[in-house]
Length: 238
Ligand SMILES: [Zn+2]
Image 1 (cartoon, helix red, strand yellow):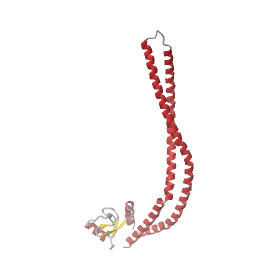
Image 2: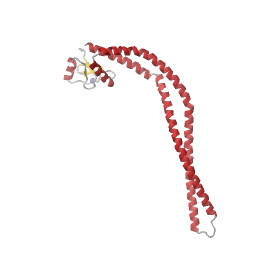
Image 3: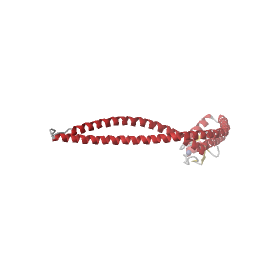
Image 4: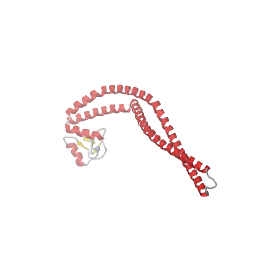
């Protein structure tokens, strides 16, 4: 079957091209390029995140400071009221003033703790931003150098692949359209899309076909798909 031979040649070439392309993606250089690029993208995202965090913390700090000032004023007022206590003041009144003063002191301490916490977070963010600002230029230079090297590699590989792709196109012209369509569909899920039928067993998925199907594969003029895996089947006799 001439068509089968053409399709098998097509498959062989197709696999060869994929292998070269995947080797590029497996290369240490490509992995480095991806890693450095990821660092740069992540840094950018982190910087944006930090920027919005800083805005949020600044707003909180502003509100905490005004709360602190208010609480401080209240404490001062209460302190003055307590210092003005005289023999005419009732015990209840004095007790209430003392209680209020104590409450306000607790409130003040709480606000102070929150301010301190926010200031600590702010320093952590600043440190992180400084680290990014320090690292990014180095990584950018490294990325540019790696990218240039990778582009060079890619050029070389394209020189190797382009003639193969041209050959593939030439072969495609000779192959029946319907068969090629079936091949491309099967290729989406399988690295090897055309496989031999050994007796009733598909050499792709290793499952046995029904006797009826196996017979059809043998007698059909066109290539049929395995009913289990969808690969195209041919027999020794094809
Ligand atoms: Zn199969």
